Length: 146
Image 1: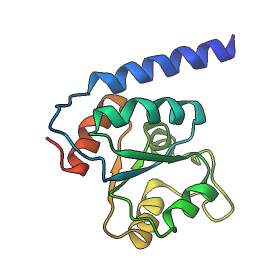
Image 2: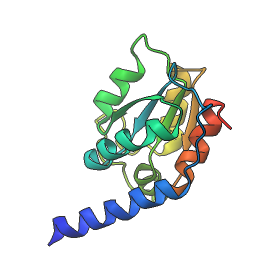
Image 3: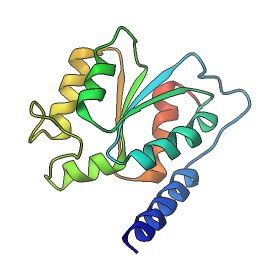
Image 4: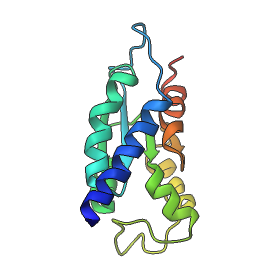
C-alpha cells in the first residue's frame, strides 16, 4: 500500500514535469551535461529518461547521495548546469536535512550546497525549484535553449 502510494505520487510528479515541457527540432544541447542532485533514486531514473529529449539531447548525470554527487562534481568534467531536484528543494525549504547527505553535509541547506557547487564548478549554472512543472523551462533557460 505504501509503495503504491509512492508510485502514484511519482506518476503525478512525472506528469507535472511534462506539463512544463516544450521543445523544437532545432534544439541541440547534445554537447552539454547537467548534474542532478535528487533524493529519490526511482524519480532520478525516470526523469533521467524523460528529460533529455525535452532538453535538446542533453546528457543527464544524477546522484541521490552526497558522496557520489561530490565525486562527480569534483571530477574533471565540466557541467553546464547543476540542478537540485524539487524533492531536495522541498526538504531544504522545510529546514530538514536533504536525504542522502553525509557527515560533511549534515545540516546543510541549499545555500550551502550552492556555495560548494560554485566553488567546485564556477561556470555551472545552478538551477533549483520546488515545482516539477518548472524543471524543463528552467533547465532550458540554463542551457540557452528557447
